[in-house]
Image (cartoon, rainbow, N blue to C red):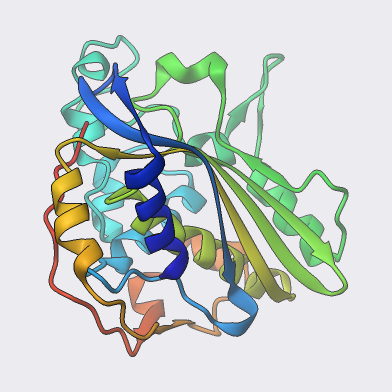
Length: 283
């Protein structure tokens, strides 16, 4: 929470106003932010100064792991986070690559599980990483990359959290995640949970102890229509004690995550929080 609150204060105090071409709104923007999460000691980064819907964040991550490309599949997992981008983005609605209602195109998990090779076939990046780490092998290329410029036009949204780099060191698994831009009042809440959970669950299915997860944000911003709520409401609240996150120990393989795992296999213990804040969402 201290890292999160410090970043919010830094954006408000040091940020510069930028016109966001995609949304047509102004953003108070700060370049470069670094967060870290102590997964080894269970320091779960769940925001307490407003209610955080952690289940939707975990459901979205599970959808990425499965390579989903349809908002309906994400809803079945327990999150509506892709409804607007799949169905309300006018540029995507006019695209010849959109297959119909709820189609997201070639974004996020599709790139992670089905990266198209120019000479034909595809690459399952996540499968390779899991197989290598399970064998205790780290070739410094254990990188899951969602950022594919050649297919931006074939999806509803370019990835924000686009790279996850896993490393083995002295028996512990580490994660470095890079995010090109971040809606701090809304998106960061999700992203922190996902970075933490991704390392925790990858460590569990590959048989390693988790270490730390490092989260780099290149462009951290607060939209103009979010600023008052952040400055005058959320930042006036006192943070509460952090909760603990639990994963069903029966989840042992990537195949488990692909097939039978649901949100019932994850739980949070001791979560105390202030009331929700309805921040505006920009499509």
